[in-house]
Image (cartoon, rainbow, N blue to C red; front, side, top):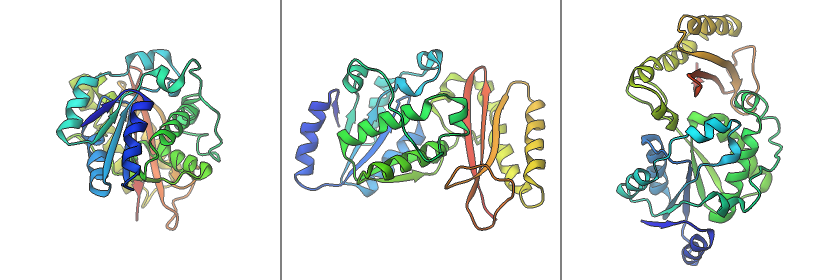
Length: 282
């Protein structure tokens, strides 16, 4: 496994790869790796000649300074995990390497995909995501890029960014991996105590119950039920719960048999944000 810290070093290596027309799979991460990230690497390895992972905690996608400062940093362990599953290349740039002197996000138009859910609760978040993913795609020039469905809104936004910028890359969404209790795997889970992590199993339990309730209840009734569930669990603060179309991410008022829909949820526990979603199928 080769590790590069500069764009120049990485591009020299990639030039040799492109000369033999190898397919490149790319998994951008912010580190604090878990089995969910590693599953993306494994998926890339199955379908590409070369797999590249990046580890970069992107400052422009954090709307709160404290959130950025508290984000888990485990680079040494991350590199061991990646080496153990035979990732080919890891890119670990500094902030100055990617942003030079101006740590500012570009502005993007994602056709409204950015307006609700995470976008409405985290000002400028998706401009930061779009900025860094665009930079990384321009450097790596991957054939395929892999993202987890846990961050489904982000996945759709990256697909839109690729479409609008005419990048020759296929964005692949991969299923959410979960802890034994159903909690979606996330780097932020490292900030939870053992008890809090166990209590957080309620999030996935509620989502599964939502799917069942869509067969017989209205969306308004389901929303009220979800709200009441969290009122009974003072450890959590429900930020949002919506059912939306997968393609447009627009909130819906009626369950559709024709258009794919998902239930999306975000809760906080001691200012740690946990998000999850589930497909609604009948």
